[in-house]
Image (tube, rainbow, N blue to C red; front, side, top):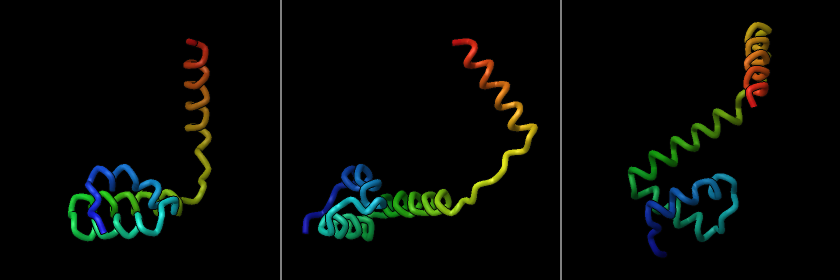
Length: 80
């Protein structure tokens, strides 16, 4: 099995996390991150971030924040 370069690993992380890569490529990527500290840190950080984003429950924006946002959007859109 050939060793992937760091560039190949980083360029294909999205496909890995989305389950859109072949089992062979998946094995190569996992082999690389088991040996490369830099890529392992990026891999772990990306996985943690995705888990946080997926696990977040919807929340209601406070009325005052919503009003300010709406007002600012009107200002920006009227400038165009």
